[in-house]
Figure 1: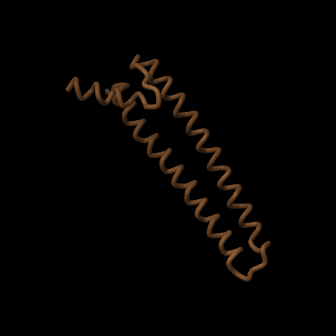
Figure 2: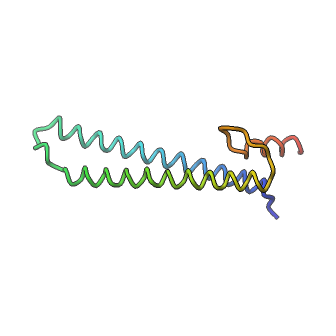
Figure 3: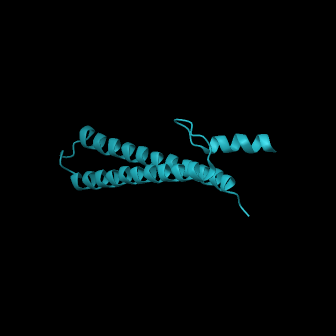
Length: 108
């Protein structure tokens, strides 16, 4: 059977990856917007050309920012639950799983 501490380490790694990928996605949107604005400014196209596409990308970026907020809320909820269940002391600014990893190495 999987221990809570081991499950916490696994979830923490997966959560960190999800957060990293969300940030990568937001960076990709920013690059796309920059390219779209460069085309509008650096070509002879009318300045309103492609405005619908600019609005759509902006909406997609807004949705991604909202998704990151939800992911942050989930992170906090899981962290609070993990600390309550395991009684591992909280270290400000760090996920409690780091303490679990250290404890499991010392116990081994």
